[in-house]
Length: 326
Image (cartoon, rainbow, N blue to C red; front, side):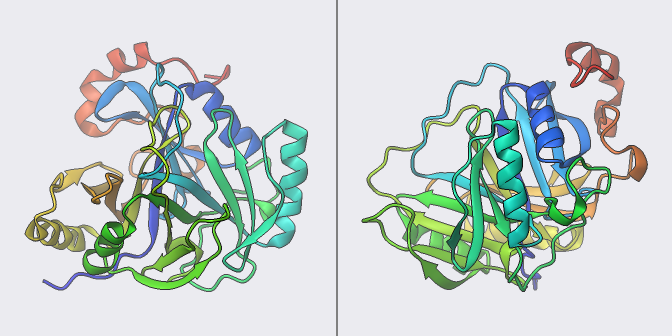
């Protein structure tokens, strides 16, 4: 069965211990839209929050599982060590630098990596994030900034950029990326720390910022111990359910342990780990987030997949409101 190439990043899912403060940071400071307020389908007593562009277009979602008692993260190797968020141009980074200073956000100076201007920063739990300028980007298109954002549209975040994987045995991750997932290595750039090997860039589909994995080798670090402020997994875009079922069969044939086909209601998924232990997901572009809410009211009410609706009263009773207007 012929499979279509993966199209790029679909979403990145991370961990927060404080859903209310997480909501404040990503909507009020970063200006992303909460397009879906749902539950962790594996633990319906806690939130799963989806922040994105105006409607949660594929390739724009940064999602968070709430784990209230999550401990601190001890950074290390064999983990996702940076998530990039796309902004329109270099001038937007100057806006964000000023905004971060105003809100007391921890950030670094604007620098260039792999030919792009970037601004690294952290959220209130130490989540490692990077704003990346699309000024010179040619490749998979980003989403569309939300006009209701407190951030002006001309500076707003509108998609996911490169995701950095830090691993101890890069040759194993490379094999999965290229031989199984269809990525291609396109270039290298200097590492952030002296004495380390160059960071290698892999692309899929149309390439560009929204379809890149950056692979960093670190054999000198302990394995990361994840907690609040860490990344749980990265997901990659599959065209539709028909193509997803082909990927499910293919991954099964490779012998890689995997989840099989998983119904997530807003998309269909497949999960597996690459040899260094990082969790990958494949996810379909649709159906999307407007099956149970209108565009105008996305994220305003608790959305439950149909198979959880009979538990709504019990679930809502356990969840704390995200803001005082709820």
